[in-house]
Each structure stands twice: as C-alpha cells, then as structure tokens.
Length: 231
Image (cartoon, rainbow, N blue to C red; front, side):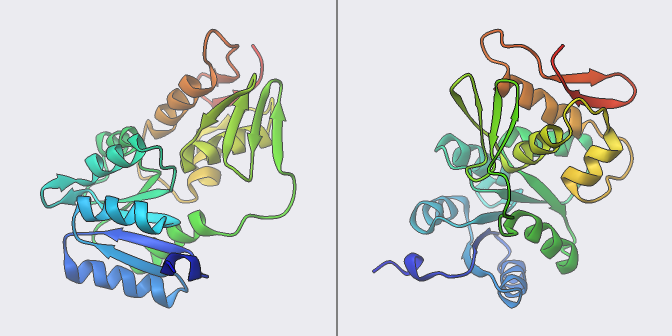
C-alpha cells in the first residue's frame, strides 16, 4: 500500500540543494502540522511530484544543474496545478515577472524567516471554507472547489494566484478596486515600492478568459486599478 494514501496532513515537497536549509524548512513545517518530502535536485523533485502528489511545493530558484524556474516550467508542462512557492534571493520586478511566467504561484525571500514563510504556507493550505461553490459573472463561472474557471463551456486552468485574483474580482463585480486593495486582499502582504506584478497577472488572466474574441470582462481604470464589468 502506498504511504501517500495514509497521509492525513497536507504534504509539502521541498526542493532545495542546501541540505541544512532544506532540513530547517522541513522541521518548521512538521512542527506546524504538515508532512514533508525533501528532494535535493529538480529531477528528484519532479519524480516525487508524480509519486506523492504533494499539496504544495517549495522550490529554490537556484538548483544544482537546473533552476527553480525551469523546474516550475517542466511541472506546469505536465499539467500539474499544485501551488508552487519559489524561494528567491532578490525582489525585483524582473524577478517577480520571471516567477509568474515560469508558473510559480508566489515567492518568499532569503534569508529564510520561518514566521513569514509559514504565514505564506497557511494562505495556500488553509481548508476550503463552506459556502457558495461557484461565483458567476455573465458567462464566466469560477468553481471554488476545483479552482477552475468556465466560460461558454470552456474549462480554464488557473494557477493559485490567478484563481485568488479572479475570485477577488468576481466577489466585487462592477466595483473599481485599487491596486492597493488588490495587493492587500490577494497577496496578503505589502509589496515594497512600485511593482507591475498585478498588471502581469491581469494580462495572464485576460489571455485565459478572453478566447476567440470573447468580450473583455476585466477593465482597466487608469490611475486607479481594475474592475470586473462588461464594456
């Protein structure tokens, strides 16, 4: 019998070349009630994903023989939608965009701080709250249980952060939301300085939900933010 069938706690895969850091992260997660798997290179990490099906993946951007960005790209190319947190040494707009484009859902910064890291993990592994199973706006449906969007019968896969952003917009239809509101409610923490990370996510959402000439639903309010409404 596979041990994966016996796991009662959410399982987190850590892909980290630095063994001491990997064990430190693993211990913090275990003390917080999570099961952990540690892989020390990208190929081992991808193998663990297929064998153990973790609920969350933590990967260092810098891996021996491969990069965390490449790992994320390979993972998404397999169709896996498990949330991925990228550990990064720098926090620039370019780094954030690279993180998003590779398919990572979020990131946290070195040096490793357990409190900040565990707070981020809890955001992604918190139990689903009871309530409405779907949000609807026009012909767009967001399924809260599968974290998929549907438009005109077309199924749309979303990353965790894309899902959270679309969910926040659909919870406030026709309401203009400022960039500050979006950062606070979707990311859950403050960004330092200016960032175009929201614009990048909005661009990706539009590409996914506006196919074959479908009407634009996410409107830009210049100088303010965004609003979900039909043009």
